[in-house]
Image (cartoon, rainbow, N blue to C red; front, top):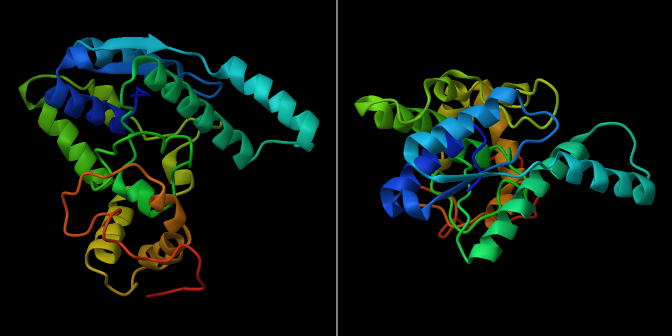
Length: 246
């Protein structure tokens, strides 16, 4: 699994160690051009706390090489979502290379709030064989992290305290693109699990996004179901339609 120094990968690591034992878990740090220095440090600290093997692969040189080829062949200019998703996909490529080499399963780290809002990259951070957090909202992920720390600091407190970020552009924060997680989590629970009509501003923002990004969730790894309605098997929404509201 990738260890980013963020909350989601930290909780997935804790779950994996509980389920499989630390000897059977490998964390990979994948620093890129826009990662804060403390991200890799926190990932290493987390791996050390849990007793898991930790490896580091710099994606910066790969990113520059691929970007140069794309610019030459496709005439890309400036910085855009192309640059962000390219980094995410290089991370996924690297993790899948390790999975192939070791004949192991890659755990993906996306949560339900990210999946609902399409805040995930196909063939990037969605790579993997299992999505342990795919049916947990962001608030539930934080609650699980605090639960793990009840007996001592398993997950470094700074990981819990720092603002979540994909770190794919300078000074990026999740809330640059998403509503506040408190509001988003409530909207996800209401629209996805209770199938209610959109009423609040956040629900009205989320509903068209939810419908528009269904194709991504059809390609997500299997999700561990813990709620009344998870994404995945049993969900039958079309991936191509003109729906604007339910």
